[in-house]
Length: 131
Image (cartoon, rainbow, N blue to C red; front, side):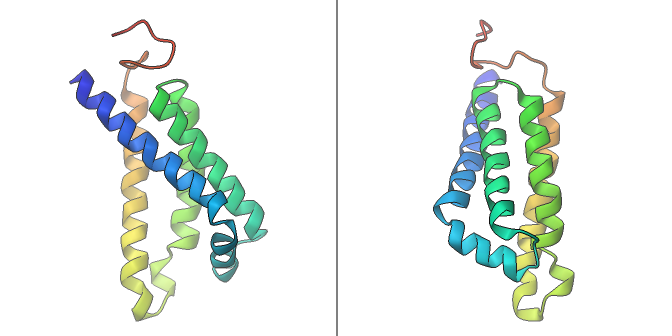
């Protein structure tokens, strides 16, 4: 089970790191979309979101300070889910895509919170002697 958890951590951590980096690589595009969605100070919001994703991703990937990572992911997922993927306010042509992203984010939020139930130190975490 430890190996499965470790592989899952690598996948989930890499997912968040990839998306966090994309917030900086595609800063212009994401800023325009955030502006379209009515996010205040959209460029700062996109960069802040990228930092939260990176913090969450690295803490999960490395298994170090996972509580901080979960808080970062919650701070990212809750507002983004309800502000950016508000399927109930969009036209029929966008409703399916926004619903998919809304429900995906809720699932990611649930999985992030489940990390809090795993006793530390995590298997093969940075600085851990637990093998």
